[in-house]
Amino acid sequence: MAEQLSDGMGRPFAMVPLDPDGPLLTALRDGELHPRDLAVLWALVARLDWRSGRAWTTASDLAAALGHKSPAHARGALRRLKRLGFVATGADRRDPSQRFLCVNPLVAATGGRHRRHRLYRQFEDAIT
Image: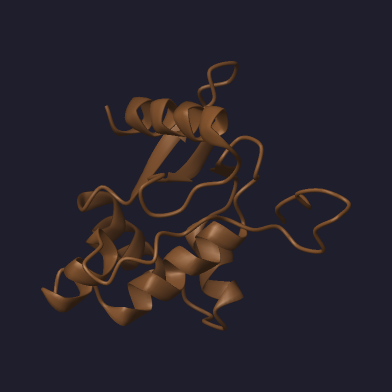
């Protein structure tokens, strides 16, 4: 589970742009994403570590969070989200066998300007 942002905040949070013509809603309107993909993305965002922007989770964990027994829908959603550049899989530099998911900061980000800049770099590294 993601860490609490501070003692003043009761729950972890992420900043999400509220643009009706933003990339997520555009992809949804254009049929490139399914509504269930957004549910998987939301479950992923809820698992982000706010400090690192990483989620150490699996498709099975995300499916279970949404009440599904089979991870097939979550896997398909992650494939579509990755194809569209909303989610990426990265590897820890100290131990490349440790894989994490990260979310494009244009979709959801945590922290201030410097942390967002670091998240952009991490996301770019993960997609290359």
